[in-house]
Amino acid sequence: MHLSGPRICSSRCEARGFGIGRQRPGRRSLAMSARAAIVRPGSALRAPAARATPDHILAAAAGLFGHQGYTATTLRQIAKAAGIRAGSIYYHFEGKEQVAARVLDAGIDALTAAVQACLDALPSGAGARARLAAAVEGHLWAMVHHRDFTAAHIRIYRNVSEAARQRHQPVRSAYTRLWDGLLDEAAAAGALRRDIPVPMIRQFLVGALNWPVDWYDPQRGPFDRFAAQMTAMVFDGIVVDPEAAS
Image (cartoon, rainbow, N blue to C red; front, side):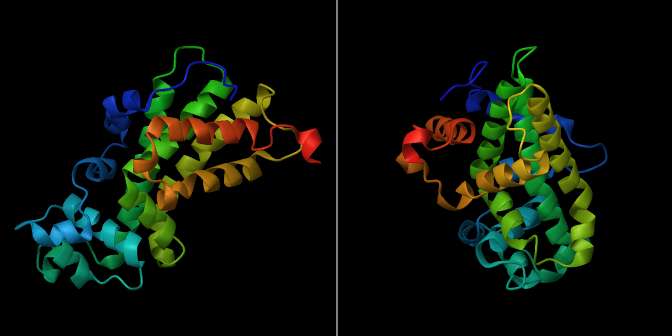
């Protein structure tokens, strides 16, 4: 692997709290719920909350959405996982559509904050290639450490109502612009192929970085090594000698 600039240690991103303090004003930090209030379906039933907060409800919903999808998940199931009565959800949300939109927001918020934290940890003047490597690591970190929310985002985005997607679209678009900006920088620095449009590179790259949420197993090795291997494939491909392979 050939990277310019220093590797960004994932522990530094974690220590910086994913830049959670940088969330948009007036909006609850759903990335914080992914960090501090995540509830998987089984554990929620063993330790129900008497008066669940909105973040607790969203964490329960994310776990269910990620495991069984949007259509198969009911408000009653979400309430049961959160340890509250079904009607109590309406104290905090208009219904399942709004819950889904907020879960979608939380998945992207976690990604945005992790990527920004890794970028902020770079030394001043870091090159475009180092910035892109930091973004790759931040995205991967959020995908695997906020698995319920990021997996839910991938699984339910195309199945929620159009109204839920519209609620979520500004958050999703902002993350797309973050990646496009980084890739534009890399292209301007001559670090990217010129025969492939930046939007296509972004779609391919982010799509590839999303799916480890399904198959990454921390028991097989530390995250730092996994992130280095993924970054090596992004920058250097999988073929050692392209001429020999042709």
